[in-house]
Image (cartoon, rainbow, N blue to C red; front, side, top):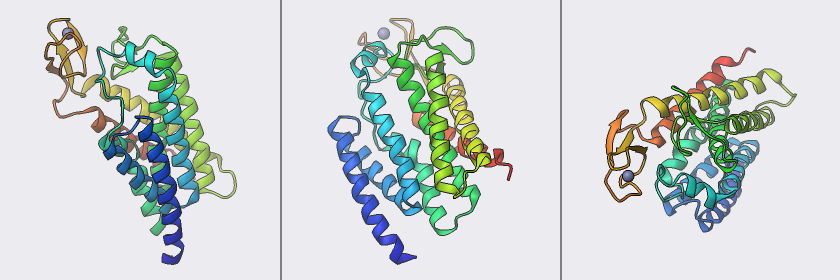
Length: 268
Ligand SMILES: [Zn+2]
């Protein structure tokens, strides 16, 4: 077991290090984010080669989709989202942390539940990231998932047609990865479970984003924002949701729910 594990960790750690370094040079990760991505990648390698490949699919697609029309997205979401688009350590862990933990547990006691949980969490992170990046790149007009009123691009809890389509494809791609990682013969029930988990997690992410996530208000512009200091220069104030419920915490909860739904949706 241990002899098998050490080369896996060395190879996985090297690849993760290279990928994280690449993303940092492209200003998509902070230094902390680079370390966190390295740790998540090494943990995925412990789960095995298919786990590492699946994480690479999530990571590489997210980096590329984030780069797609990046300047345009930044301009459109300027009044809502903070300037720094580099993902920090908390953001990386909120998206990939549960998958990393599941990979390590899988290596030591591989029950199907652990595998499905990990992939349901990764399907959620992928679907949610794709939805945000594609929706914004294609200039979809997002609406609030709750009241259906139009919201500014980048607003948490906003959904759009292109975003939803991207989420469906993202969840499906990770469900295919799960079939590769968790079974030898092609297995439809497991594919469906991870797919359903990923979509449920993404919807939960939007619902939590629209309800309990901390929201700030600029009195000067009469507008919602996630910025502490609004683009007009005035300080925003906390007005809705729980003050401590950050976007990262919402992502973590959503991936956890996506994993749990994947486990529950599997009918062996
Ligand atoms: Zn303002």
